Image (tube, rainbow, N blue to C red; front, side, top):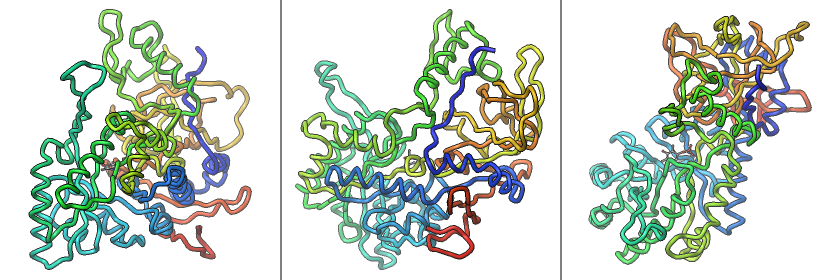
Length: 499
Ligand SMILES: *Cc1c(COP(=O)(O)O)cnc(C)c1O
């Protein structure tokens, strides 16, 4: 076999020490079944503090709102509720997420309600004093009508903008750069309609800020959008409105793969495989968006950038340090000069290193005699581990049940299949290289799955069980305590884990 094309995960402490606690993890799966999600609530609090440190460095005020949709866990939300009330809030995108955040200890004034909303969601948000991140002028009218009909207090609102464009300094006169299209938010070109709706409904809503969320890793695009929000807020002020906060959404990202070299080697090899100059790296030659057109690679690779030199708090730092294209100052200085608060809504990045997903190896067999690759069937399905759904490629860590036998060492390429009677139920379409062939009873640990991967797409097809979720905390060197996710509270308790 060629040198194994590993994509080994980035694991920092304490996730790294959890991965070394093989006996503990095996005992959890023996008791609670496969698949199993394991969360580290302390790490989410640590991540919030890292984001706050970037605020301090730039002398900025405002809040970090956890985008709840990244994970359904109670432990993570409760742990964040215990953080400084002025520093950490939660961003909810459904009625149930709002109810959950309230039950986890967030008061309404620390909650942002985002996304498209129905009347029930709007009513509860207004009733508990949450800030409503408005998706459209229609939603503004609907909320205002609810406030009047039910005699609710004036509701704090942000307006979510989209469709940012700006003159392109490099492209010549008239060239426009349009930011990513979004189904959400009000396009800037409809700003006049929005402003008059805000004025008309001033008895019911108070504009407290301006928001955007761009689903991209492109930092320049975000700097441009931030500046346009600041300029739009100047317009608001000229009209007698008084917004104070700029909400720049989420999308700070995670670096999943530890080594840049492994990521580069793998992506280069994918192009070669698509061209046919090396054997396929994927199930039935899947190209992840690339194709061979007469000997040339075409298409765009639909993959998350596995290795990222800057992500999370580092990415926020970069965004705040870059100069705004029109006004020239750094984004941080723009906010400081205007005395604006900064809101961010990190989902994925806030749960970086916060957990892993375990699956039991059920069966190992040869995929086909020619390639020598094996098919490893796991006690989980693609819904339980939706890294692939987000284009995230990273290797699981093998946690053997016992000691390897003679001749078992040595890298192998395997395909990971799920527990559904469905040809498409592959955990990943990639040929995964492992340091040795797994055996039934071994565990595979998928590291860093707390952001979207562990429960976003979980379903009950074929009545296969949902993964249970547990919260763990390290007590001593090799001593781990655990409790069911729903039983975790961020206070010391004799039996369970504690903050
Ligand atoms: C999904 C979402 C987020 C979180 O995005 P991440 O990429 O997980 O940081 C934040 N804000 C809004 C409006 C979203 O839809």
